[in-house]
Length: 105
Image 1: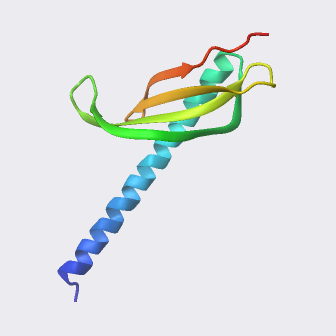
Image 2: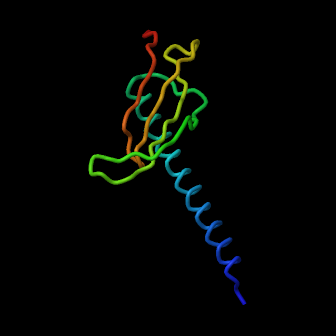
């Protein structure tokens, strides 16, 4: 027989797995958008990765509550220097991409 405590544990585990799955999808969306932006700006995305810097709850333009996430990445324009960048997602949509000033060949 299923007890209330077992049901609560199941719900908590399921909620955690859903949040983890959503976070992986957001990270993948950030990585794809960062790759696209780096290609457009003619720079190299270093380490082919983004790293979560922070997250928060924020409302979008329609007033819906979404998860705001900030990821950092590193890029190079010459292959010798490393520069920092940041991509911000609201939900799964890109809100902003910032790159520090870099040397152009």
